Length: 545
Image 1: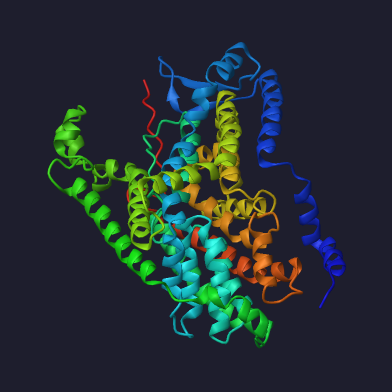
Image 2 (image 1 turned 180 degrees about the vertical axis):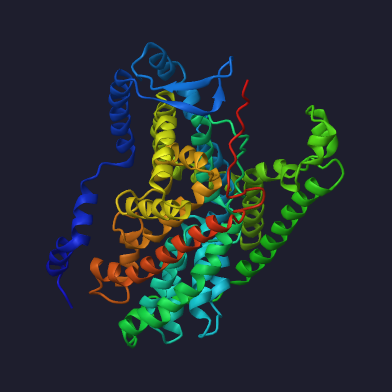
């Protein structure tokens, strides 16, 4: 057993020690955005003085000539006026803010009623030993719909499940941590993360002023995240059973430890089991309601020929509309759909299990969910102003145009470019833990730049997601990293920070390499990323006089 002093000394050496020391010196993400805004103001002044500009890729002047976009100083009278007069609108119109608040109203009830915890336990408790690893990994990846519940419920439960099966509990922690955090974007359906990231993507698209007719669709990465799940599942299975567990050695249970945590493996109570049944019926009811609104009389979530005709389209244009164009209201309704789904399922579960006794309990849970978002609101305020001011300066579009030109001049194939972007996102993740904070930084440049290279905003979002998830599990700056260490020390007292990092590095490398490869193949083959979400992006043709 190593002492605390020895563990502290080990953490100070090598590359991981440098990462920890550097990361600990970083300010809070809110102030990172504040400092970036200050730097942006100074750079905008310099860029304006130098006459930095670019030819707009899609706009033409009234006489048919090119439109030149010039950098603007953020200390100009116009931009100072914008800052102070539009501050409330800049904050409240930040697209991720509305998406996250709406979804979390329902998810907060589902989490606090106990639905997520019981569903996770029911899914993995009775798994056969041979299928224990893939089932734990699968449920861990799916638990991302439950937000923090995946970390605080699934990971310690996985250790108990492995121990009860005679396997090393640390291998269970590794498999669950890899699924919850490494497979952060892998899933079978869009969820809160999709709403958050696509809200930022939409903000970056609108700030770019490239009018390509793109509309946000939180189901835009659905096919890709399903492919990630199918790819990551066998990888986590293989790494756990063939690399991690053999290195850990045979599990020698500590009787005192097993007794102390034995209650967590208790079967579901009658109320919890009944609650899951009721929640399942509620889910079916909500899905049926959305299907009725899409396919039933009046079809409010499906655009008919009459709807397109009312928009002024002629018969030829209507005939060209694909099924995903007609389902646009359905896709845009999914944020509200998740609110209703989580709210109905959580309420039904709580009513049956006894965790929700009246409407007052329901309101209290929704209130607590909003309290948990207090820090996010502060972060969103800073991020919203950074993104908005970046757009006012025109530096985003100018950088995107020149960046796209540089990439085209380099001769690098587009799949290679996408692979490099994934690797860059993975490297940045070692220093900035928040997924939304990193995407708010990168999206204003990457989204328009990739659009100019023929990659859709969905493609830019997918590339970022691959890099963001792969290195979550090896950075001490990830907010749940210390918590995972505590979970591991319940079973092995001398398990240190270096031990956890070393245990997770094989997962990180395998997930990163496989994710980059999948993204490059996806781009090369031009496979749609989701319903109504092609991987390619066609800039509108510029009419010549």
